[in-house]
Image (cartoon, rainbow, N blue to C red; front, side, top):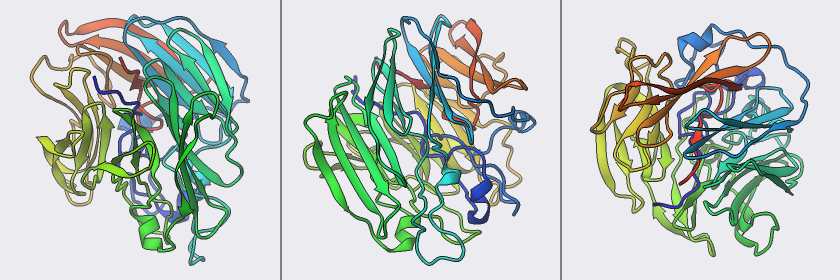
Length: 435
């Protein structure tokens, strides 16, 4: 089994309009793919926008954050959900197993939404020192835990119900992302200092819980070329681990003038944990995901296939898509034989496309059960079980109904269970803990 700690948020494409970022709601795709930005006042809709059913939902009123925990030991395959809403001071994480048993923890947090991370406005020729742009909130999964950062601490919740934390204060005006190793021993962390010009990036590896055995992989100023910062970025954000080596990717660090759009050109690569040297580099991904079996990419803004690259960077499979495709959020089953992919059509180049089906299942085996009501960002729990996360319209708070479905039985086997958060494009899809 490939040992990597990957978040499920894919390299999902995003269209952001600089003039409306300051008031946008929703987390940035990419880790999320994660989440989608809402349509702007210019009429540009996010290519990874939520389905029509969620668009009709009204957001509940913001509530004060009250830390809490309701945890228990879980068994079998387990998936992790991460949730924080725009402007909220709360993070809620939930673990759920195949029997529908749940552990949930709520902690306070600093705001980690991209609407706060605007690094250029229309009146500046270089990024503002007041903020910056990151792929989304900082969290990670391993074989046994979900980890999340609240601005001062990295917390974790284990599948056995245990909790812990360690101090990690990045300082003001810094973006931070991290990824824990599958065995919970090492962590790779990247910070980008948006208070300086040029922007300054540091990437290092250290022991989980103690900060010991720190190895700095990168500590330098970034390019002042705004085109590069708006494009590939050279951010080196952590995605996870493969074969005891960190996997990094790039994400735009600056939004240029209002009306500009960017896409997550992620340039994933595997690096040496002692030197930071690139060991494996994948082709440019316009929108896709990293999984335990490699990277899934769409090759352009109008792709008609989802391409699968193994951990040597070699393309090993290509699955046809029925319309001009900007991005896909893909999830590979544990045995590496079937792929769930939620794909967004390009509404500008192919406006007449039949996009009634956006969730695809590739590979030989049973079809998805016809009773699944919301085929959006479905996730494998094991080779047979699939998680459906259906947003509820609940004025008392953001809530989602989770159901476990069996493909071989074509029926529901657990749930529905109600958990905090919305997971249909306004937050990262669930992430399966490694086995």
